[in-house]
Length: 399
Image 1 (spheres, rainbow, N blue to C red):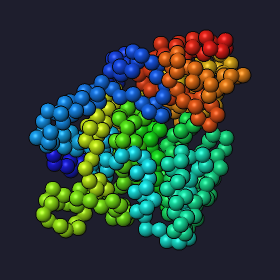
Image 2 (image 1 turned 180 degrees about the vertical axis):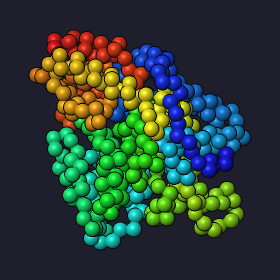
Image 3 (image 1 turned 90 degrees about the vertical axis):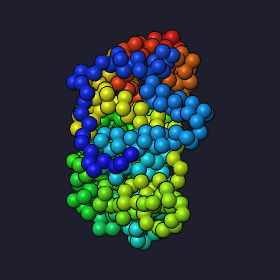
Image 4 (image 1 turned 180 degrees about the horizontal axis):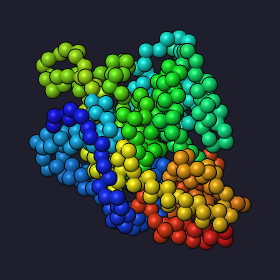
């Protein structure tokens, strides 16, 4: 499939999506009150159908239909690009977020004495690759949080003339605190550094327009809010940085003439696909394409997201019910701009980890992070799920 010359922004299909229909397209709802999208999300029906068809064809046809698989694979790249208003040339299909972060951490032209700035309490994937650079004389600077808030002023103050990259999570994995990539990216650029966005806890819900937001690189595995299968993710780098990073894991698929195996010439692709060194996870990326199309259908685009509006409305309702029940919230809900689909909470006098395990037996799925329970609400969740949660907690704890 030829690459698109440019990508027009995705538009919401309808101003008022049918959330009940979205719920019907998520069969997990027939068995569970599912609140674990910040860990591993369930896949929608379309993703399942795509993967099932691939499996059947792999069983019955082998590679006789490989061309159709490749077209779907490339379509996933194009859909991902449109979702964030990027060019397909700026999108690499990668196994996971860690892979994308390492493309930058290991590929950047560091010099001894350079430094990287991150907020504290990042997910380990956004710590270890930068920590590893100490072996190359690169300093890792960690900025303390203000409670659960990411202090943008303090991050900017930590930048000096040797800061090359600032890396931060769009949404905090434990607290759900959401930062503004537009503001942080702009201020990082003003100080002469580049901005890496760990997008895994925001992409799939909140809009991101890379033509507006000064994000130089981002990575996000598809298996959380994007509702894709594990092992199929997205890496973005701004086209102007293509030759900045030294490509890692060079293979037959890294070069411009990748399918001409008799021509051995190291001429790299002039696109982010140069980082896809060899055979790809066809089933995973074909499934991810179905997930992205489902999210688009229900209003996810680069400049507006009906899914985000729905998620914030649901989490507002849920937070209010928690407070009425005298549960303790561990997420900042003071202003809309910092809210996300994640709610951290505790039931007073109850062991959170034990309760998490007991709730599983009541068909309620959530996580335990940072000493608290963590709910992660997507747009197909409903009051029915909330009722099951509260009923189960009352049954198990009397609270």
